[in-house]
Image (cartoon, rainbow, N blue to C red; front, side, top):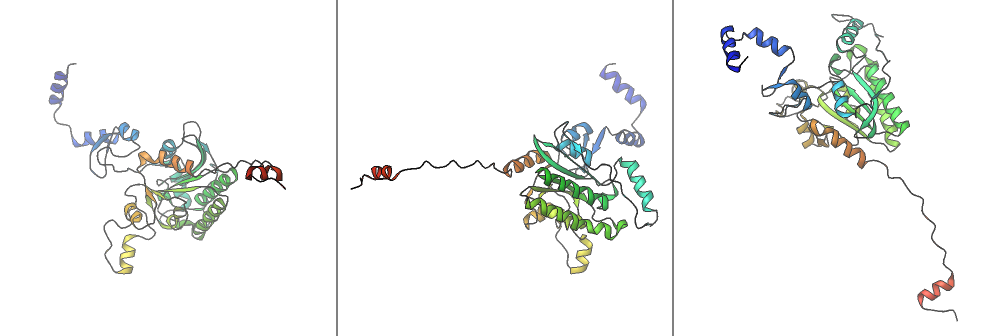
Amino acid sequence: MSLFDWFANRRKDGPISQERQEREIADGLWSKCEACGVMTYTKDLKANQFVCVDCGHHHRVFSDDRIQQLIDQGTWQPLNAQVQPQDPLKFRDRKAYSDRLRDMQARTQLTDAVQTGTGKLDGLPIGLGVMDFRFMGGSMGSVVGEKLTRLIEHSTAAGLPVVIVCASGGARMQEGMLSLMQMAKISGALERHREAGLLYVPVLSHPTTGGVTASFAMLGDVIVAEPQALIAFAGRRVIEQTVREKLPDDFQSAEYLLKHGFVDVIVPRTELNSTLAKLIRLHQPVPSSPLKPLPTVSNHQVALRSGHTAS
């Protein structure tokens, strides 16, 4: 069929209905940028690590894509994938917490809101934790805290740097105090990791809020953030009502926090792999070589070198 015949048939079929357009978009062939509205071929968007090629907007990505972007192919080794969430408080709102957990696990194919493991980043061995916002808003419950603590302890024992990609709405209210205690548990593991002289880099993606921000997200040796990421503890409206003031438009953005010294660097996602590799190489311990003993010099040789001879 020639191009002319194709256009002629399209005219016979009439204009494309909105329902048909939406169906084609829903099939996943094209993706619409949330910021500029530009339609991009999904494969091209994925090849650019889900960063809009037109305006640079960083689309939200999930744990599987993050691992693929950061870890060398064939080197990923999951840790503690068998750890399962429980419902110790028998929490029930409109729906039982245990039922919500089963629904989330079926929908995301994850056991909870974080994946942890070891692998190589540009040939460098690291311990990596990646939070996943799909699973109950990336909220930090007992499993998230336990898996991150075990990852850090494993990395400390193996002498590995740790990178944690944060994406969370904060502590998981359905687990009450058991969720809040994870803040201190992870922080304690990071302190032991620091005492061992090892590097820890948190990557703050959109959004990083609540108890995650109040603990391990802000304890890095170098704190990295993605452009325009929301980074906060309390919500904007809560703060405005408390201080009774209108906050700046860019308040709680990565750029605002960089300006005020809360993060160290903002790195576009397309440069994250290479930037982390540079940081890890710069912070690798330098192997110490044993000092060679100095040659012994007799008093006679000293006298000769100084131009004096013994009388």
